[in-house]
Image (cartoon, rainbow, N blue to C red; front, side, top):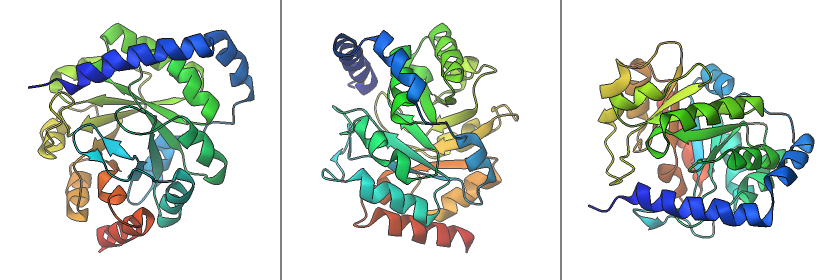
Length: 261
């Protein structure tokens, strides 16, 4: 079976090197002085009655284009208006059709915290995230060595970014450290992209009680959200379910109404 994650990481390393040649780390370090104040994604999700983290993405490696011409300035504010507790924006271009501009475009038009969702491998990307206005970043255990994950988590906090650590297997719990703000269980295997929501329920009893839990991927109905909440999860990252709708914001609003019912 083709390992999609390995392919993405190889491409991402090349992409980062090209970006460094165009804009140096020193230039980013100077630009960050003008970054907007960061907001707390953890607090926003924890205080939300639904905990829905609505995701903006145009495509996926396994299913191709979902909404190729999607405009963040239209969809992201509609997510906020519908009641999203936080926003996730894919910034990987080759595999997900996103760019850092998608965050920059909407940053001043929404008050809801924004997660930069990408394959973060280098502190360079943390500076990028902070400069365009992200409030939190995703760190994927399966994509990092443990020591690198710790270093990136510490650096993210130094820059004022919160960290969502994503795991898929129990063994990856060893990546937890005191600087992690939220722990996400990805129900999608990043090697094969096979999805099972049962993964969140299976790992729930193993998760540290002092962290905010987020279930990611494969959530398509309100009843699943209610069951996950009963199991201890407080955040629910949902993208494709909304993005496939003609009007993603309206789909989210209806989804939230059904959760309350």
